[in-house]
Length: 197
Image (cartoon, rainbow, N blue to C red; front, side):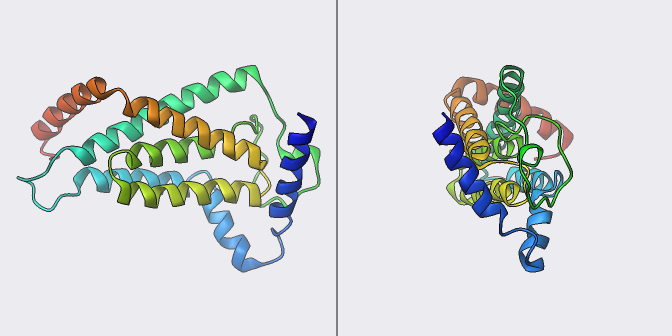
């Protein structure tokens, strides 16, 4: 395991070593790695996807199913993360090494990355139903995870593990077709009554 951690630290040092030297890299990284920007973009993307349609009468429910799957995937990924954090705590990179820190000092476990789990759960949840939107969201999730390494708050292994938790959660939810169909029926009925679709 020490070999894996050595490679993990080497990759971290190579990526984080680029931080703090160039404003044109640091500024977008700070925007991407903060706790609000990417989650807000993902939430707005889900809202836009819910309402996307060429015409209201011909709308199928694929996009709504994608939004529900992404939402449930995020909930499941966060539940799994809480359990993993109870079992294992890994200190943040800045707690053990000199880093170029572009962010505040989070105190929770570095492994797995909450940010990567959330980003990939939502992106993969959409991707299973809509490859165009899902592909775009996967790029955003990937940049979110990379920015966390660049900014000094996660090791690469943390981000990969978070991405795996997110993707696995989305795949599990995707396989629950009956649950999604029932939830979609309930949600669509409620949304129609409220005039939202």
